[in-house]
Amino acid sequence: MKKKVLDVTDYKCPMTFLKAKEFIKLNINHKKIIILKGKKDLELLKNSLKKNFKLKVTQKNDNIFEIELL
Image (tube, rainbow, N blue to C red; front, top):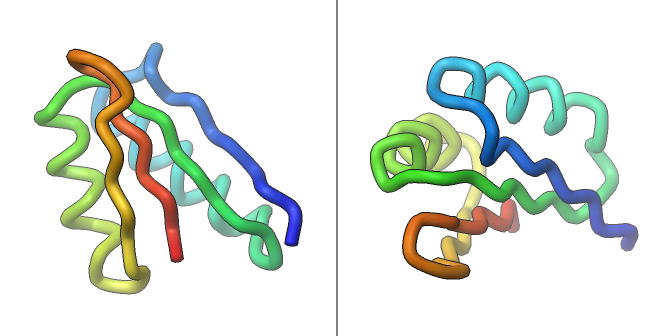
């Protein structure tokens, strides 16, 4: 399975949610990873996504997080 990565570190919520939603729609048959900045944006996006997906969250460095949709 191909892996697709979305980097939304330059955006703040609600743009992170909108970009992630479009990314998920366009990459249905791929492994999906979303990279974002900030704990607040992480929590907001994680709460939205966990209703429909299993998630694996990894902290890359101080303020950068990676969400993998399983």
